[in-house]
Image (cartoon, rainbow, N blue to C red; front, side, top):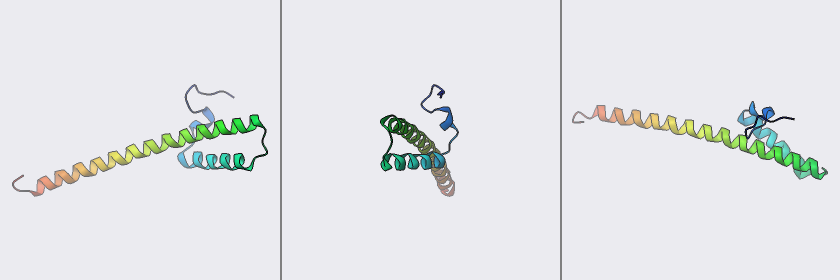
Length: 88
């Protein structure tokens, strides 16, 4: 199995947030169920860490988009408020 050299292996890089989250939930279920060898548990844990980082990346991107959209709305509101003020 080869990795792209970044934090996210190639097989995870195409996942959207919901897919990564669902896979992370499954990893947690498998770890909680037990019955795995130490090597299997460690491999699953590592995959869970990678999925968690991917989810964080998606959430950070969404947060930036929301903040940018809110800033645009605030700028528009301020411009409209100034246009309505005849003394402005």
